Length: 74
Picture 1 (cartoon, rainbow, N blue to C red):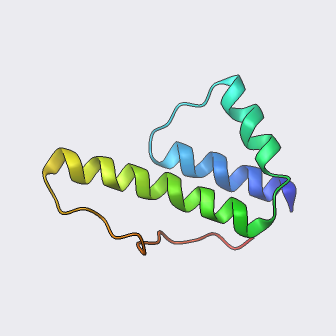
Picture 2 (cartoon, one colour):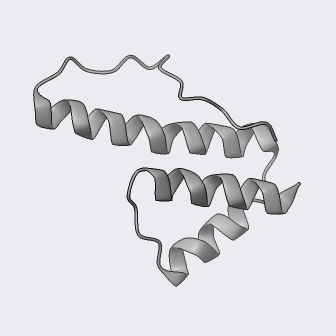
Picture 3 (cartoon, one colour):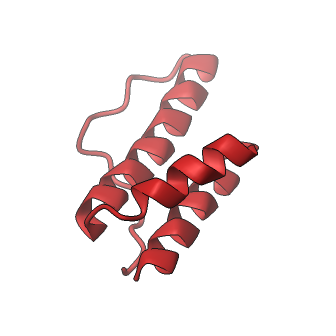
């Protein structure tokens, strides 16, 4: 399960174009010890932050907090 959580968090970063350094990967590795729902929240935050940045660049309306990207099955 832990490896799956790491993979999903790393993939979320990669999907939005975040280059991960060694410290970033070490942090995500540590966060993978959290419960699955907590890792899912972090993955959702990554996607929402990316979408908010895109919206800001295009002048779109602010994203709602309830926006949820497709969630991986843990």
